[in-house]
Length: 275
Length: 272
Image (cartoon, rainbow over the protein chains, first blue to last red):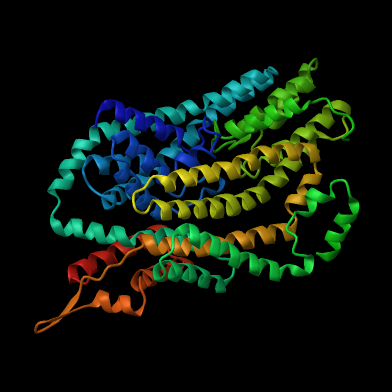
């Protein structure tokens, strides 16, 4: 891996890190290019092998698909996992299984780093306090923006350096592994996405019977020759039929009460009455 | 309270954009998004307290306190607080305690709704679609995911702030409206489950390598299973994993280890 490639990957890792402001806050960063699916594409483009990058991204994403970030606590840092695991896997000539095997421990390491920055960055809140004491609004803003420097130092340097110096190491490590270990990694890597989907299911299932919907989607996809886009339309139709039938006594109209009733107290009354 | 206004549309828009970008810029365990909250409102506060240094100081300190929510759906809270701050600054109608308690009362509920709806459901659904489209190595899935996510969430994030400002406290009753919430959640959950099921079937794999030999005849177990139903084994792996996480309360790490040990044993026995 060339130095410029490692530096560029480090830069994107920083931009896609949790808390970093530059890409519409967390929306474009952590929840956007920080997702392994997108990280795979970005690393693939930088390293000149888009297909390999995307395939690694898909595999790593599948494991981390059920992980959300409630209240600032990160269960596993998929940004670090992806932006180090995927480039190293590509550089070492390994496939998606290698990326997955690297991503899991890296995800745990990322949590430790995240906790570190979340502690250090309190200094900027204290700086903002001192500015507020002097009624200096601009100083408050500057303090807040300065906070991201800690994230930059942490993510940019760790990712760039690990990618640059780790690539030859990962390559020789992969070459020296016995066949049985590689086979085990391959089989384990194929089943591990079940982990991500199990957590996701736990999170979004709110009624027991709904597990059948998961199975329905599974059976449709594997038994018929359809694409994911056609499945989305099937899913949307079925869901709308159910929702319209269930909530029909309120009228099937789906507009929020609120957007209509702003200037009209009557609708609000009606809505409350029916509720 | 709404007929007296000092802030223009531009001021509100600027505050909304500041929130949209910088909500977590100095996120930390002590104040969480508190500094980001003050950053967002600070420009408008400067205007409200143009020649009242003491008032500006109080207002800035008031908005630097602990704040934590889901920043995308929760953008409505700084919006609401801005309306309250304005009315406090103009005629003291709203007491500072009301502003603080409004902010504190809202951050929990909106963190809950935002985490479950946007981060916990919409993001994984769009990711699943992306995974499905990119399963063959094509970049289109990653691009579709990013485009859809930004196109849906950015208007919500920006718009809710502005709406929160224009409605003030009325905004709360709308967004926590039970029926709207139920309809949106049920539709999203159902679409999500079906799509996620489809995507999971293409990603989770459990190929059986075992073959049964009797003389010249070789029977592949995988072929038999495929005749019962394609992708049957991986479905069982997925459902058992879900059962262990949900009913047995297995942690992520425990399940991770469980799957790896299972894979290791299967490879050793030559079954997979």
